[in-house]
Length: 112
Image (tube, rainbow, N blue to C red):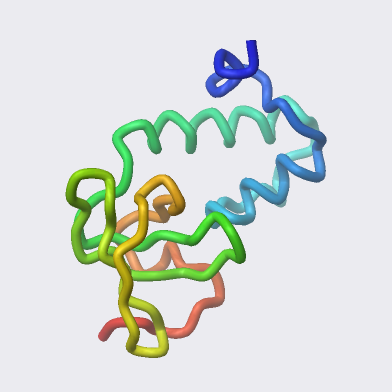
């Protein structure tokens, strides 16, 4: 089933797989085989099961905009954007990037 693939084989094309890894800020430049890309994807997916953490970085699934997540409460996350704005979003709309600013790929500083 499609749901069972969440920790098995990536259900899409190699191009989609690379796009998903890029959205998660995962470097895959060393990978030569689809199986290596899928292993990175599985590792990042299993880390995601616990969801977003308070005081961490995330990326919006649609559009790839990065934010600082102040807190997560009952499935919603308070996101702070680079332009100084903030918004409550469904946590499911965000992919966790971690708690270190180094997780942000080429992004300007959004908190000092």
